[in-house]
Length: 296
Image (cartoon, rainbow, N blue to C red; front, side):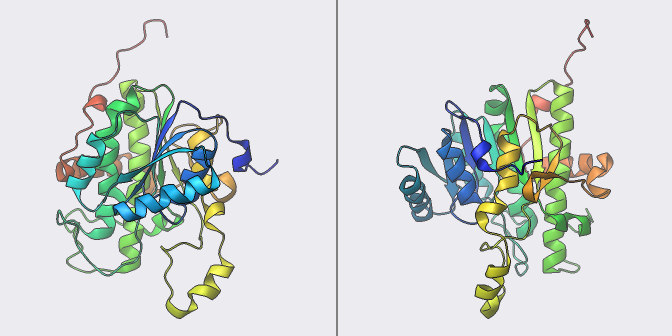
């Protein structure tokens, strides 16, 4: 089987994509290739300067690209709401932005930073954009997780990790949340009859700013795959006609199997309800099951 590359991407003219964290890491080549293949791309960053620089970098590669910056800080729910209110149409949402293995901090809303940024911010953004996604045939939500999710654990009585904090364990928990959200979104969309594919990806260990190893950084970056290679699973999940909702792809667009915990519908449903309570985003379009088809 020939390995899939972005050269196989279809013409995306007429489609609008939102890519979070598009200013660096795998977000930049993700946004670049979507724009190269005709999509209108809203490339988000946390500051206006980073957003403007992202647009300039993409236009240097693809002078006729339709790309615009979006100001979005996933660690601030007010920022998420402001950004979502300015979006008028979207066919594809790539929940790409993330932080990893930082010292314990809180978001502006008081959430543990890695869970708040990697999961809760994207949960809220997806819910706020859902009415627009549901209005577009063949809409997709691609969420970047990690194989680190297999080590993730949830204690709903200590979501702030006040009883004990580990940089890696907090990261793993946030990546498990990404997969639980992806699969639960697909289940709820299916029950509600919403035409939406929710897909997760693991980019592999890439040479991006999320990997910080001090003075060894230049050497380690030589040993890791490029950000462009790390973006391949996201791009495949975003555009391939062979993708089905609820799937999980890794390096080389290889189909992966999530951990046992990620498949727990009970855990996913509880996380969903807690996330809705914490963010105030309820996904009303998914609240009711679609009526049965009498011809089926």
